[in-house]
Image (cartoon, rainbow, N blue to C red; front, side):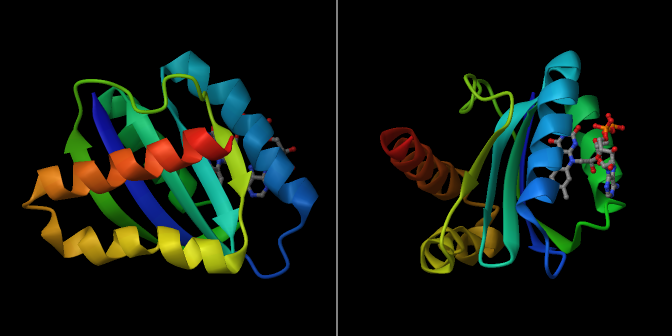
Length: 135
Ligand code: FAD
């Protein structure tokens, strides 16, 4: 199993309906391919974590790259994972204010620390704890 985390820029003027459509597609498709994760939207950006079988996650990510509702996707982390962090979320969407997103974006600071996978995993665990506490 792998876990992939990326950031992207939301299409300018993206509506709530469009975000809802993305969530609907995800909830329909992801369970079929064994992918769980979370989608965070705020401050004109998306952050998504996808976890599941390697082929399924990579195929989905490639499909997402062609979606015009976002652009400039950057993978922040991709690693092998023994267990799911989001086992209860086929795909949850969380809307957050731009300020809070700045906080989440700190995960990007660790992008270059991929070698230190443990440091990053710890940051992710903190993040998941925070999400679970809030929702
Ligand atoms: P449907 O779910 O049947 O499509 C539903 C409706 O969505 C269509 O009627 C159409 O109006 C609209 N739509 C579909 N594709 C597009 C498109 N490329 N551009 C504009 N409108 C469109 N999909 C997943 O399956 N799992 C995910 O985890 C996931 N995460 C996403 C994260 C982001 C940030 C974005 C932007 C998209 C994500 N998507 C995800 C959507 C994905 O890119 C495809 O649109 C979706 O998988 C298509 O599903 P479907 O073929 O079953 O179409």
